Image (cartoon, rainbow, N blue to C red; front, side, top):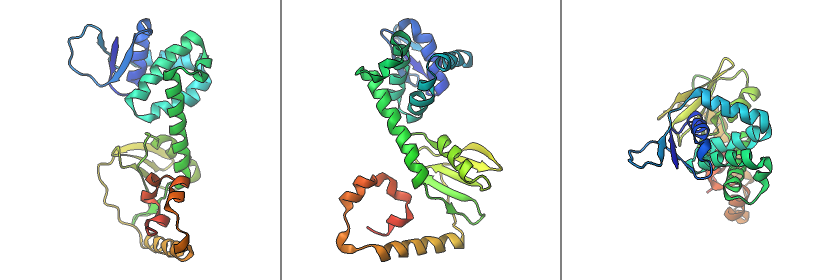
Amino acid sequence: MIFQYDGTPQGLLTAVFDGYPYRKNIRFERGFSPSFLQDLVQVKSNQTKSQRVLVYLKENFPGFLNHEFKWAILADRPEIENALALTIYLMVDHGRDILYSDHPQARALVKNAKTISSEAHSYKGLLRFRELENGALYGPIRPKGNILYPLGLHFKNRLPRETFLIHDLGRGTGLVHQDGQLSFVEVDSLEETYSKEEETYQDLWKTFNRAISIEERKNKKLQKTNMPQRYWEFLTEVQDLF
């Protein structure tokens, strides 16, 4: 059986609920496509059904809900969402220990959950805010996972009095913090204008890094090992070095 859902977490959990009787032979797909196949079911998102799945997980597998589920759902990849749904069925039948087995779906889920969790942790230290003309802070990122919300919670606690926007350029979305509240916004493009102080500090930071850099000891390969190059795009301190 193929169960198609709308691509939202609620839609996926609704499909998990409806697909339970077919759990031994089922696959989940994001998006709806016209088909006359008898073994294809298109599931409409249903809050009541999705909440029943969440309540079941909270009561029976709270550790899974707060760790593997939390991060895997932020992977924002259909194949990981399929592994997540199938792993829920596996835990229903075999218990949480299935996560530590060599079952391919459970193994893929755990691996990708760790990857997204690690990425969110990295961005907590690597996100660079820039001050705009209006005094707000702007932090562009290009993550693999859809990690805006956990990052927003982190910086809301770190910068409670600041107005800031974390901008996921790859997805065209942003998370705004203002007056203690977080809200999602669509951001297709943004022409940011930095404050004079921001431009000065960026120049000073670049000058400092050029001054301490020793040309003969540059090692790009080692730097890429210590910090993957995909994180470099918005790091002021490395943009001038290569």
